[in-house]
Length: 334
Length: 275
Image (cartoon, rainbow over all chains, first blue to last red; front, side, top):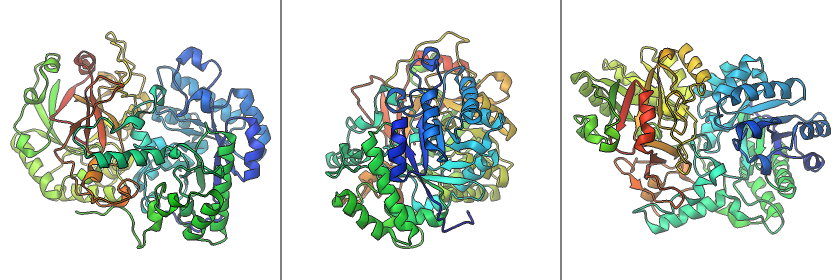
């Protein structure tokens, strides 16, 4: 278990995709940035294959010069680059290894977010383990897995969405930083164990619709839950996001020693990124001041609106924050 | 070439590959002996066998001189402890099954506490595409991409892994070549599409009320999915699609699977879609 607790330095990690977003997101309180990027000539060589988990045209930085502008504008605030597709076509790992080295050595990128084991191992072999963040797609869900990746030398592990707070506690080890999902964009399946591609459309949106012999009311509730995972398809009347949210769990993350909290949504509008970061910073600051889950929830509702979303835990990333007792993980019947 | 059988219950333990394999697929499979029986779960820690079940299974395998192979999923801290207890219990009874790991933490457990057990790298470690909506282009022999997975296979070899497993994904080659030194194992005919912890079968068995999905991760599961699988129809794919427990599977065309079979040392036939 991790020995450092009551972490006051917990950071808000913001997505971005252009230099024009840097100043507003810094003003909102972002402590770190992450973005996606493909090397020049990628599409000519590898076609429509993505370098990371999001659409290159809808969510990524335009090119290396645009990234350089972002890094300059961000100043001392770290900028991480996601190269976290779950797999790559023939020849791509070599290209991305060289590209990753260039980003780290020449461009001032703080870290690379990686999922594919071949790419991860190649970058480790190139001497960059200390600047690698293990993507949530690598599904690190227990302390043995944390130790495995810690021994490989990665500096940060991004834990998957679908863990309870107690399970997150059980993943923590010394010597590695941990990042958790905080707000926006759920996933119906476990993202790291989903072998489909969003290039062909989002597979899970139609999941269950054609399932035989399932109760209709169950499928209706499943559809509702999928809708909440998809950010309820809209924003609140005050312009704040309505998707999955773990703000109230920040005090628990702080106590567990989590170092960074991810705001999801590289492809989102600047307005959505801005309001998401603003919510996250507000909640983090309440936690820093000693506030608890209830205080954060009420402040969130006051700022964002949509009280019913909170009161029914419809969109909670970590609904066990409202459980009492010492262990809210799954019951073991053995 | 040799065969393995992934059975749903011990009642199926005396079946042969021909009993569970579709005729169109069987014609691509050379004659070869059955050498292993697979049990456990690749997709859900709630489905790990109880100690007595595993003991019975290992006893049966020993009686028939078949290798017992325990499938294990991605696990949480609790799942890791449960698996440790299961393997300890089996060792106390003199059973040492091969273990398929789909989680690096499980491999760490095997290396640190159950070092005598044979280690197989499971199919979830291959993160290649299995999207049933995509076309499968036939490839000529030699066209497979054995470069993919080369790093992970090298690492696995250094960590004492003896077998690499996969299903028929969209790009043959992840199992590598015969020169890599692994038993290259192919699971047929159900290729996994997607899996997760929010399980429809678990939700269906839960009492009616709010939060069966939002609260799903920390509610108890009595494994109501055992033996249950359902067909799923989608407008965006014609391939046969199945849901079993928390996982969606599809069946690839036999002609596509044939190339995968040529690249395998062991083929494991699944009696039915199973999480």
